[in-house]
Amino acid sequence: MEQQVPSQELSRDAATLHPDTSPGCCGTVGYATPMDAYRSGAREKLLYLPAVVADKSRPDYLATVDADPDSTTYSKVIHRLPMPHNGDELHHSGWNACSSCHGDSTKSRKFLVLPAIGSGRVYAVDTATDPRAPSMGHIVESEDILAKTGLTFLHSSHCLGSGEIMVSALGDVDGKERGAFLILDSDFKIKGTWSPEETRFGYDFWYQPRLNVMVSSSWGQPAAIRNGFNPAEVGTHYGDSLYFWDWGERRMVQEVRLGAKGLIPLETRFLHEPTAPHGYVGAALSSNVIHFTKPAGSDQWVTSVAIEQTWVKVDGWVLPELPPLITDILVSMDDRFLFFSNWLRGDVAMYDITDPAQPKFVTRLWLGGAIRKGGPVKVLGGLPTDTSEVPTIPTVKGKELQGGPQMLQLSLDGKRLYVTNSLFGALDAQFYPEMVGKGSYLLQVDVNTEAGTLAINHDFFVDFGAEPDGPVLAHEVRYPGGDCSSDIWL
Image (cartoon, rainbow, N blue to C red; front, side, top):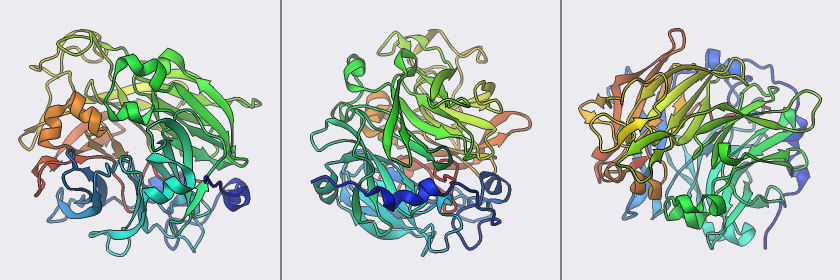
């Protein structure tokens, strides 16, 4: 029987409408404000990311990578924590506590939360006891989640100011679409669902209590997603909606159909400043960035295409036009820059969002993709206006980059961008089978905000094709002290 969490148990998030003015991050979780994180946040020295075994012949694992340039193990995997089961397909991750708990001495950022999109389990990995060698803390079994909520195909997780953990779900045990949210308590006990209301499709979400809003997005039907992408199913098995929720009352107040310009909206990001009524979503298939805002005096959220990208006219691909395919977007901690990845086309773009509704192009870096000089896909037209010819794909430490840039993570000071290239098992196999066989990578890109440039750091490269037990596919990056896509301020 499905259980829903009583509203009073989540009241702290809706009621805490004032900033915490305590300095820095010492003695509490995270930072008082986004600008504290930007100005005084420690440099990331360890990275945690899931390593997925494509053929499911052995367990996925959490890889710990040394990112300290002064370390003798810099740019190496220094620890691997295997999951106890095969076939989990670890994907995204979050924390049990983040800056939404800042000022609460009873909370600590101890567990990395890993929902498994394949199995429906939730793992909580202890990264605090020994940050260089994380250990398993808790396992929430899929059977228990199904028994209490009926949910599986779990995706995004966020920590709440109450100490609870919220996880988005895409469907049910039969693979049918069902957008809903699982709530776990601070001990990883299942409490039920966040709201009795559900959306047709589910995917990502972000909440802003001072604006009394949560926004969620819509990928597609799990049964369809597991089989790879079929363009004929776009109108029936995939979403084009953004959903806006009353955060305090936990009810959906507005659905915005984005239409042809916003097909398959995935990652959602508000500006970090908790009073700013601006955010973005990357519409994967349409390959546009959608801006959403709530005008002063209005009770409705409005959307507009902030960045529109053309599809590339090609020969030698499965379709006559190739969508850039935005698969991740990221806002810098100071809310000055937006980054996004075009997984099929093969580039990472950087935009100035000082005016959130009018992003300005800054630069682009080509990191692989289907569009490459000497590759099997011939370009007939439609490259970005700043790119005059088909790009030559760089090599890093002797390796030509396979696949396309996918998950992004930025340092708190905005100077280092981490990039991986695996999207999802079925899609990796469909579009980049060579990458699946050879394994994925983790890159570090140097960001110069003054000069407006992106450049590969050739001293940092983790080749997940060279792992001891065989190639794996790496996904989302997290830092022990928080990052630009997991921390939310109340």
